[in-house]
Amino acid sequence: MMKDARIYSRISATGSYLPTRVLTNDALAVELARNGVETSDEWIVSRTGIRQRHLAAAGEMTSDLACEAAKRALAQAGKSANDIDLIILATSTPDMVFPSTACLVQAKLGNHGAAAFDLQAVCSGFVYALATADAFIRCGRAKCALVIGAEVFSNILDWKDRGTCVLFGDGAGAVLLQASDEPGIRAAQLNADGSLAGILCTPGNVAHGQVTGDPFLRMDGQAVFKQAVSVLEKSARSVVDQAGLTLAQIDWLIPHQANLRILSFLAKKLGTGMDKVVVTLDQHANTSAASVPLALDAACRDGRVKAGHEVLLQGVGGGFTWGSVVVRM
Image (cartoon, rainbow, N blue to C red; front, side, top):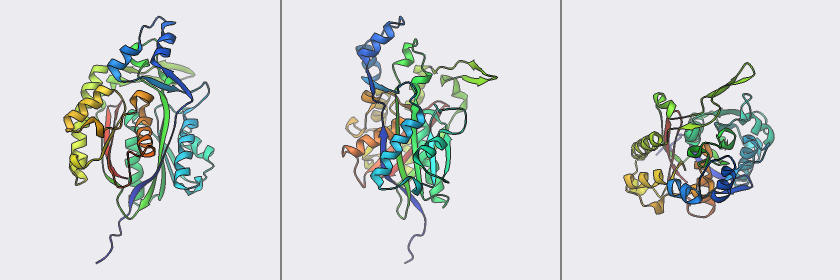
């Protein structure tokens, strides 16, 4: 019998990095009060599940966070930067207009020659990037891909808008995706609906040396909540079926860490107990494209996610975008 000659991809290592500054809800409430914004730990926890967030220091850029997460993934895999032939960085907070933050990370790592580019799908970014890297490897265009989600969302928050500024944090997560003769990425599904762009956006830009439009994150929270639960449930069922599995065979669900209510509603709709959902939201807040790889790395390093486990990764965010990937670790 002939051996299957198809190329697959597998996650061989994970890594993450969080800025050293930790801001608890109580400390945040004190800071916001100076600007006349009222909030409290009870108000934030009861509505979101968030208890603290990490914030980048002044001058600490997305590429800095991404580079540290990448180094930790490389160290775990026993690989050097020059083993990488593809770098995809998912972010909505690039260091600059161009070049891409992926190229800046490439330079900081000391890699020369790998393809490198940014991918922008907001909070779905890492799932989009992972599916894209998998496609590169499956078609033979790459053998060792560094996939990163990294954000400094604190730079685009309106700290006078209580409805958004309490929700987000900064951080980075990375995985090393390598060619394999056995499937690791079992199935992927990516979707978007641009007609919903207005419910979650940062509608500003830079033109002629001036900031144009609104440079801060704006969100219709109720609309996002309604859409997120609906699309994530449908996407989960579809991608698990595509992988030839049932939801009962999924060992861990790692959704985008947006809001504990969304995670709870999603688990209930999927018939999954919260004991099978990885939650880092309370410690990290919403780190956009970094949230899924941060949660994955945390669960791998503390021993919850083990080799052979079937893991469902899900993202949902501005665009409106959403996506799911089934991974065998």
